[in-house]
Length: 325
Image 1: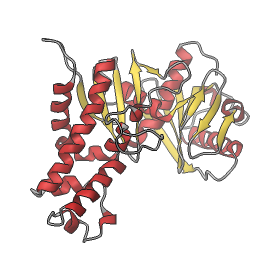
Image 2 (image 1 turned 45 degrees about the vertical axis):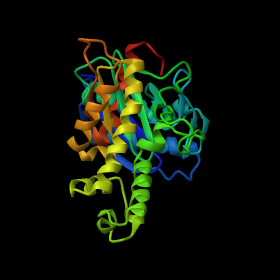
Image 3 (image 1 turned 90 degrees about the vertical axis):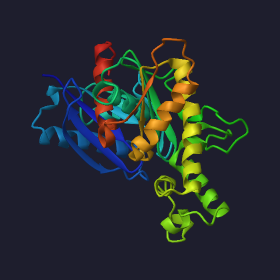
């Protein structure tokens, strides 16, 4: 049996784990990133962590077919370089060469959102279909596109920035510098903003009471909690949130027609309260002819393992395609 090692490089933590060829996670460990350090030091720590995981799994380095790294930003997988990473001191870092100084195995690099999408496509919510899109609703909106079980990221590996499609022209400012992006509305940040606004505009709402009168305590769950309590203001915030999220997802459906759109991130803890009306709205907005099968919207299953498993499966895919790592 071949093994693959996946590394999820985050701004706070670095995670590493071993999988088999099917993406089953066998062993996982993590350390703090300490992003204030030089890039070379962080990469060396990634390699040392990988060695520790191998030791825990009682595997020799030669028993690992390849290493995959999921990193924020834009990679150059062909040359093993991380061109740029937001929130980390990485600019044209020769990640493959630095990593192999410590652990000399084939190394492949891709964007962290892309590898998370691949994890859902191989071992998660979209494992039964060839074409899927994963959208993660967190502080921002990220995601990845998988076509024929392969990551699609454009000619420069900077594609699939799903959060930055515009759904409201001239709308709310986005972190990317544009206005009206999906991220500005469908992120947890956007949901909190609209919940605060609604609470201020409607002091009779239960929203304020749910946070003890301190609106700074409002989070992505608050509007849903208010809606479940029968509060009209909370329900209005939820309805508008789902309406705008569905606009963005319908654009992805009409462009790509994936079998499945997988929704991940903290907002998805709302489960059916989010999924059911979202599916109905996406069905209504999608450009389907009579009798044409419709894209399913599903909740993500991989959770915190998505980055590690996806990175390992990305390495497996690169190796299968004959790439040099």
